[in-house]
Image 1 (cartoon, rainbow, N blue to C red):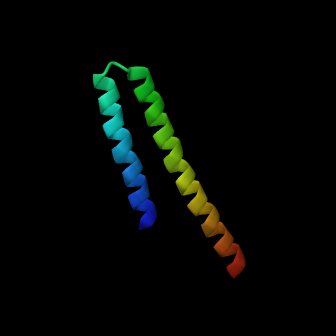
Image 2 (tube, one colour):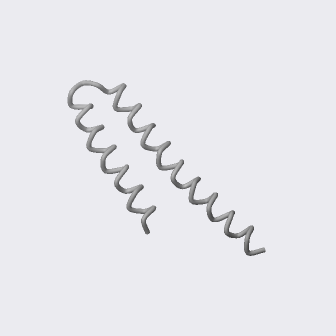
Image 3 (cartoon, rainbow, N blue to C red):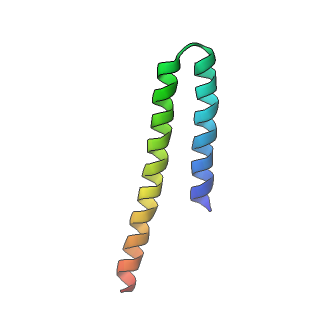
Length: 60
């Protein structure tokens, strides 16, 4: 459940900052921010998947 809230928080912050940057005319930085938010979310998911695989290896 914690992972879902962390990803949601990243999405909300990224969206708000992206809107602010777009309105300030910084479209290129806004796109980079969206990419960074996506990468951060993927890294969180990859870390949790790695933890899951470790637990599964210990069980077998």
